[in-house]
Image 1 (spheres, helix red, strand yellow):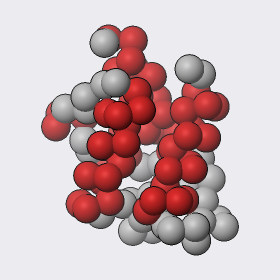
Image 2: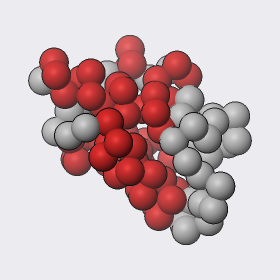
Image 3: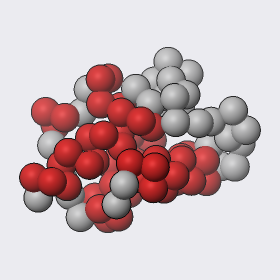
Image 4: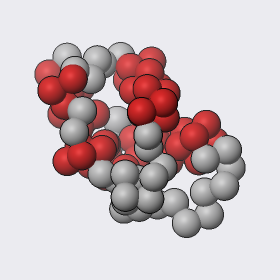
Length: 85
């Protein structure tokens, strides 16, 4: 699955399940942590979605702002972990 497809899937998930459809300004570079989109509960939802959708486990060592700052960063992490799986 290419980067753009992963970003689109994550965008749809965040828009629907985390922002409950209120995602007019959301795009691949939206600063998710700075804007308060991701908190601990929402991060748990997102990690569960990634694990279900992509069949990978995101270990605690990967959960840091550099990997979850925006959808591009999350997509890169997903792609990297998929190559290692």
